[in-house]
Amino acid sequence: MVLSKLLPKVQDADLKGKIILVRVDHNVVKNGLIHDPYRIDATIGTLYHINAKGGKIILMTHVGRPLDKKTQEICIDEKTSIKPIVDYLQNKLHIKLEVPKFYQHGTSGYLGVETSINHLIKDLKAGIIDGIYLPNTRWFAGEEAKGESADRFAHQLAGLADIFVNDAFGSWQPHVSTIGVTKYMPSYAGFLMQKEIENLNRIYNPEKPFLSVVAGSKFDTKIDSLFALLEKTDYLILGGVIYNAYLCAKYSFSIKGISADDIKAAEKFVDFSKKFPNKIIELPIIVESDTLAGKFKGQFRKHDIRKLHKGQKLNYILDIAQESFTELEVQEVFLKANTIFVNAVMGLVPHFNAGTIALDELIDQNRNAVKLYGGGDTMQELKRLLPGLYIMALDHPKYYIFTGGGAVLKAIESGTPLGLEPIKVLTENKL
Image (cartoon, rainbow, N blue to C red; front, side, top):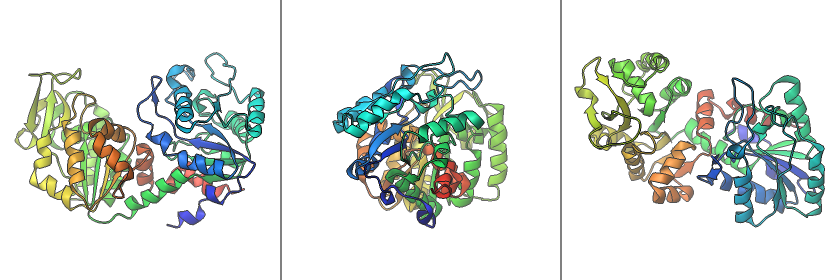
C-alpha cells in the first residue's frame, strides 16, 4: 500500500531524551467505569516503544461528549473524567502518572493549558513521575472550536512536547488534538494506527467472496458507508434500525419507532440497491416486541417477512430471530465468504441477544475467512455475549478487531485511509 511509504512512523523518530505527546483513543469510560479496556491495551505497544527508546510520555484522549452542541456549555464531571483510565494504567503497568489540574471557567470548560503543568514536566524529565495524562481533551474549549481559539489550543499543546504521536485511529474527527497540533511539531503514527491502516487494506482489497454485515440505530448516519459497501462487497446483510427502515422502504411495512427521516434515507438506498441485484441478503425471521422496556413473556413474537403483507403494521422490531441464520441461503453466504466485515449488533441491548449470538457463532463456523470486526458496540457485545470467542479472537490470525467502528465506516466511505483527516495530515505535515 502506497500510504505506508507516505506515513511517518514512530519507529523512525529519534525519541531519546524527548517529551512525546501521544494522542490515544482511550474513550472507554461510561458513567465513571471502564467496561472494556481493549482500546487502552491496544496502545501499550506504542507506549512501551517510546519508553524503551528514551522518550518521556504525555498522554491525551477524549472521553464521551461533555460539550452540549446546542448551548456550547462544557460539563466537567466524573462521568467524562480520565481518572479510571489513569488508575487502570497505573495498576497494569506499575507506573506513576500525574494529571494536571486546571481552572474551570464556568460552563466554558478549560480555556487552555495553564503554566501549572510546568512543574509536572520538570518531574517527568527528572524521572520523579513516569508520565503525564492530560484531562479529557473535550474539557478544553479549544478542542472542538474553529479559528483562533483552536489555533491557540494547538500552539499550547505543541509547546508541551518535542514530538507528536497519533495512535488514536478511532478518534477520526478533525479536532485540535488529532489534527491541529500536527501543524506545529514533528508528527508520527503509532503502532496501533499503523496496524489499523494495514487491516483496512483487507477491506479495500478483500479476498472474495466479501460479505459485510452492518447494523445501527440510525439509517441516515450510515447511508454513505452503505452505498460504498454495496458497490464493493459481494453480499450485504443489514440489522438493527437500519434493517427495519429498509423493510419499511422496500415492503411498505409500518414499524413502530422508525422515523420518517430514516425511511426516506432507506428509500434512496433501496433504489440504489437495484443496480446490484442479489447482493443484499435479507434475514427473514424478525422479532416484534410490544415494548422497549425488556423481553417479557407474551409481549414478543416472531414474524417471517415473506408471509407479511404490504402495509403490515408492526410494533417495535428489536431483534433478528436465530432461525434466520439457519436458512440455507444465509448459511451458504456466510460459509463460502473469504472476507467478512462486521459492524453489527442485531438486537436491542441488553435484552434481545439471540440474533447477535447466532450471527457471531455462524461467522466463527467459517474457519477460513478473514473476520474483521468494527470496534465499539460490536466489540463490547461480542465480549459480553460470547466471552470465550472474544478472547480467542484477540490473538487469532483470522480475526481482527478494530478499535473504532465509526472510523472504519468513514474510511470505507472515503475509499482510502486518507479520507480520515488525522491520517491525511500526518502524511502532509512533515516537519
